[in-house]
Image 1 (spheres, rainbow, N blue to C red):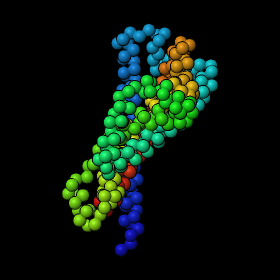
Image 2: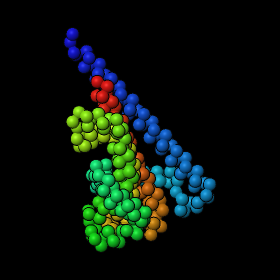
Image 3: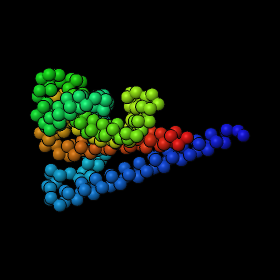
Image 4: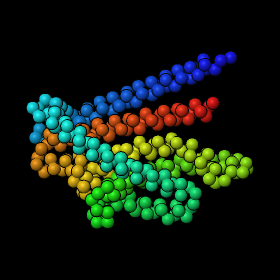
Length: 278
């Protein structure tokens, strides 16, 4: 019997799964955007924010698309957003790498856990704004400070989530691997790591908005670039419509990247489940 029909059927199943996942992600994003718009308009009205300070969706739309220099405004804002995305990516990468490395160390050694977790709790409990002067003095105002500040925001929630995932292996499974001659590293790589995939992707989703928070703080307090600094500059000049437009742009960018992370998570976990079932 030819394997071609089986292969075609498998491809059809995967294509259908991809379509369903994409549609589900888009649907969730549309619902989220609707909720944000309703809350935006509703809160402005409930708290009776003055029109000078509180700008609604129509004001932002007019600023970005209907004003005479709207094209130049959009180009400038997307340029600022690109800088912020770059800085967020730096902080996200630094924080996630550190979280994975430290999580592995904690799972492998109680000594590492005893040494690292109290320090992580201390760093997490101190506001980043308070730590910023020390970080800037130590690292300057370049890429290193962006990585440090973004990494700090990302690190702790990602670390806790990944450690929880790596420790989800039951003692019975550990005993089975040990009986068959497996080492601690075998348990980590062959059992704990695959079982921790859902936790890892949860950490990724949590860390995407956190990375943007770190990037905005770094731009405001250290680098003087991107949307983080542009918002502060616009506030000081009472350019309130520009402030709201900048917030909308970075919110949309963050939401799109969160959606991409969710889509990748669904695809990877579905592929893993298919491979496991096979």
